[in-house]
Image (cartoon, rainbow, N blue to C red; front, side):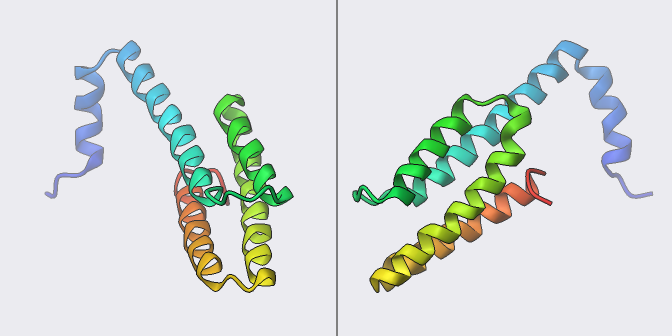
Length: 119
């Protein structure tokens, strides 16, 4: 018989008390919040004062302060802003920025999907 999570899960529950499990869950949720903020920060590294970049900075601050239940909506908003950031770079003819922002946006999408923030 192959060992898997089904076999290990009951032992881990026996080893850890409910307070410790709760701490792990809270830490995981805070990790998701921090990682989402970090990935938004990678998109907002430009020094320009374009409205799109100001919106990204504002969204990043809201991610850091909002209740955890709001993160799925904020992740969806982030994906809309990724589109706007990429389009703004493309319209300016800045292909290097467009390429970087597309990669950062794809990374953000994969993270948010794997974290259960996006469908």
